[in-house]
Image (cartoon, rainbow, N blue to C red):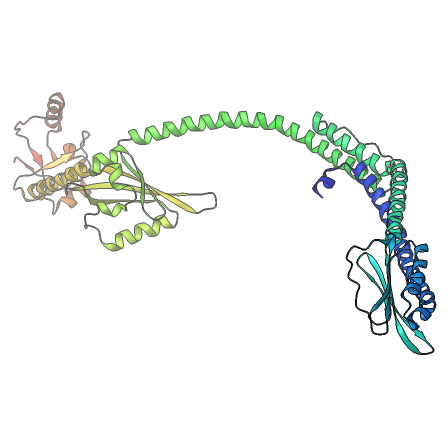
Length: 480
């Protein structure tokens, strides 16, 4: 079947015509041959039966008188029957009286025991037993054996006739198929050639010829329509390919520029003086810059995959971090200060800004934390606060009058001793009523202007005593 499947359509059609012719010849010849064969066998049986009846009537006298010579003479008549190979006359007591063998040759043949009257075909022979009677008296039996040469000759003749008939049918079928298979095979062959031409030249403008309007015509028409669609899509693909090349070149240029920009940003992040770390949406650290390692004492490898809580000093309450995560999980930026612990155990204060990174869909994927060490600044602020508190204590509790003014004389601060010295109830009372301390509190403002000039020449630094007369709230003069 595989060989048949691989044959061309023309040869398949030819073989199909020849097979139909062979099957037709067989369907016509075989039943006729079988009928004739069976009829011939039946004729042979009838002829044998007739011969046996004649021989039985002719042998009654020999059997009655047990005349063996007469019985042999009766059997010699069978020489005229070339099909008969053996015959035997049995007496009433089943003893052979006379026998006949074709050609007169006896080869040690064992004559069969007499059997009931009947005729049957056995392997390579036809056998018949016949009762010999006279006036109803059983005289003996007749055995006749015939070969089947005539039947075999008939079969050989049937075979030769069938082969000749089949051969003529095959030849006729071949000649007819060569003529009538062309309307079927030619359109298919043309279509195959067109397909090979399209594949070989990659030219989808080629079209197959439309020979007729039957099913093959519909097939060719559909094939041409498919080629037309492919040609159209191929043209569109070429146009899109040309545009795509330009697009790819443009995108590649943009990609290179973006990569350069990313590298620049990455270098900037690595070189940034502020500590930077990036976590995923669950809070696991995925990247840190060198400044983070300098600030915390942890290398990047030590913190990758860990939570930033490894830096926690325990100085912040749980609510602090709950509010922090709630803020950034909502997509907002968090800013604040917190105290963390370095790897070596020392504490430091940092100012931190945490910004969420979101996709276009709004889904948060990462968080970026930018940290600045403000430990020294916080220490300076604390020292300044302590100094201010100390200064304020000295300023407020001093028994001498102390004041500060702007260069143009506007009072900034006045202690209680000075307010009382000038007759005011409190420093606030004096500041509320005096807009120019030099002009309103001193009798000789020029002396204060000279002092201001000297201080400006000395850069505002220096220490010097001055004696000047000042004016009280009740406009009386006094010299402190």
